[in-house]
Length: 293
Image: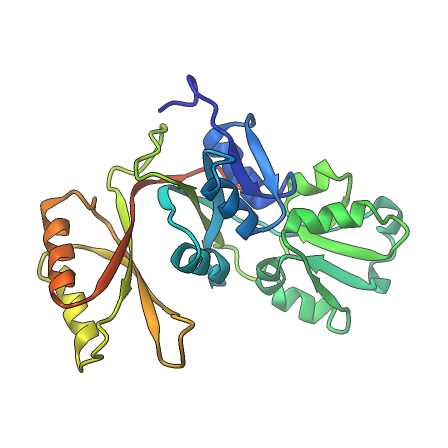
C-alpha cells in the first residue's frame, strides 16, 4: 500500500505538534491524522475500527520502554505492529512571549513524564525547587502554556510545538544526553507490512512470551537457546509484570527476522513444546526519519 494512492486514517498521541504527531506525519503525510489525548485512546480507536492505524511511542533510548503501550498490547488489545519508526528527540524549554524575561520566577514546568526525566539534570541545576507538572504529551504542555499567557509557567517540548502554539524558546536542547531517540510503532487490526519507501532490509518480529506454569529451573535459558542455536538475532528482551502477583512476568522479545522464515517457524514450534505461551505481534519493517524539529 502506498500513500500516493491511499490516505488512511491514523490516530496519534496528540495534540498537534507532539513527537508522535511528527512521526506520524513523516510516515503517512499530514492528511488523515486524528489526534487523541492518551495512548489508550489511540489503541481503542483502532481496536474499535474508528481508524485504520494508530501510532504510539514504544521505547525511548534514555527512559526505556513505555509501560502503558506494552501493557495495553499485552492485556487489553488484539492488535499487531505493522511498522516501526525511530526519530531523534530534542527537548526545548518554552514560555509565553510575555514571560520570557521572568525565567527566574517560573512557578512550574510542564511536560510528559519522559520529557521531564530526559531533562533531569538541567531541571535539577536550574529549577530544583520549581514544581514539575506531568502532562499527557509534550504538545499538551505547550498548548496549556499558550492558553495561559498570564501564568509564569514553562513547557518542555519540540520546536514544532513552540511554532504551533506561538511560544518563545527560552533555552534550546536542554535534554541531558544528545543521543536520544524514540521508537514509535504503527498498530492495526491485521498482520502485515506497511510498505513505504525507506524501510530497513531486515524485518523485525515482536513476540510476547509467558513462561510455563511449572516455573522449572533454567527455563529462560532454554527459551534463549531456542533462538541462539538457530542464529536468530535478538535486538531486545525485556520482562514486564503479569499483574497477577509478585514474581510473575512475561517477556517481550524482538527478533531480527520475519516470522515466516523457516528458522522462526521452528523456534515458535519449540517454544510451544516448552509449554510457553507465545503471542506474535507480527513482523514489520523499521524506518528512520529526519531529525525532530
